[in-house]
Amino acid sequence: MSHPLCYTIRTMIEKTYEVNWAYGLTTFINANSDAHAWRLARSMGKANGLGKVQWVVLAEKVNG
Image (cartoon, rainbow, N blue to C red; front, side, top):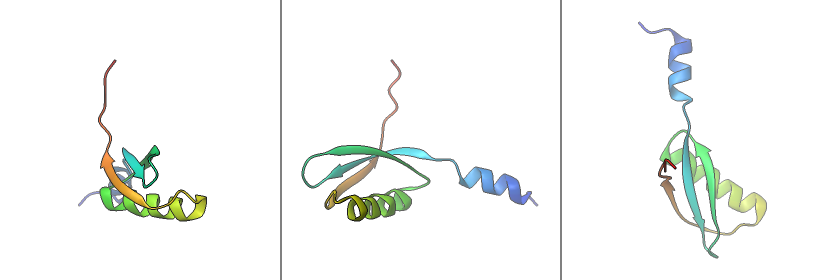
């Protein structure tokens, strides 16, 4: 049996997602999953007047 704290920490790991808006702007958000990223983007669009979300994808990590 795993400790509840270990489970909480493991599920809280966030990834960066790229969000493309209907009028061409691209932004980045941190979320726990694809579904979470979509929910955040939609609520962000409504709250800030950013418009409709075109797509949300996991951002690639580029080592420079």
